[in-house]
Image (cartoon, rainbow, N blue to C red; front, side, top):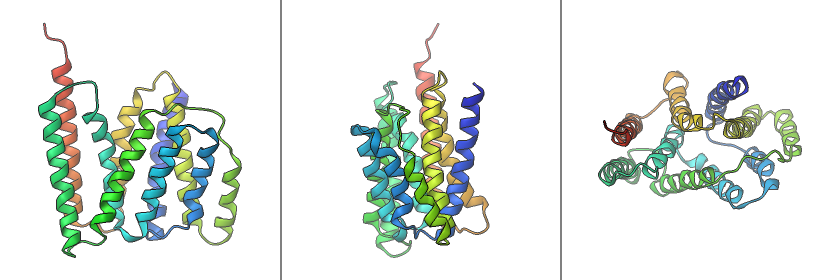
Length: 245
């Protein structure tokens, strides 16, 4: 249990460090920064790996053109996908949460289309697809212990080249995957559900708390609405699933 708790704590720290480092970069990350965790993943093979790599690649392609806060907030959709496709069936609640999410994301894309919010509506849609791909990969992921560690050596040229922020992002992503695999392979793997809610919230909260970053009101409202609807729906589905006397 100690190792699992340490993995969870380290996951939280890595998310905070990764978001701050990404924020400093202004969304401008060299390809190598995202290639490092992908090269680390690829040798283990499997369809899930390639789906995950595709999702990360698509997301990375949009970063330079999208507002930082919007890029981080879209990850709140990850736990919502878990709720929508959970075994607890409630068609009415699922329809409700989908309607709210579609309305919020459509509102964000409309603001981008009208030029009232930075970025492009098409890129926001691509980011949503990226999160869906990562969720699909995570759902069928099987932790393994044969990852190739040599790609981490590529962090050295980034650091020497003055791109410390890019090196930290690469290390944070790789370290986060390691920690999540550690939790997933333990007998406390059910805690991954908690982390799926906690980590996206911590990532976005890091932006809100830090005085260095500005979060548009529209993005904050959309994120908060999606988060609250997800929490409420998940809670209601759990209550409905409880056996009655």
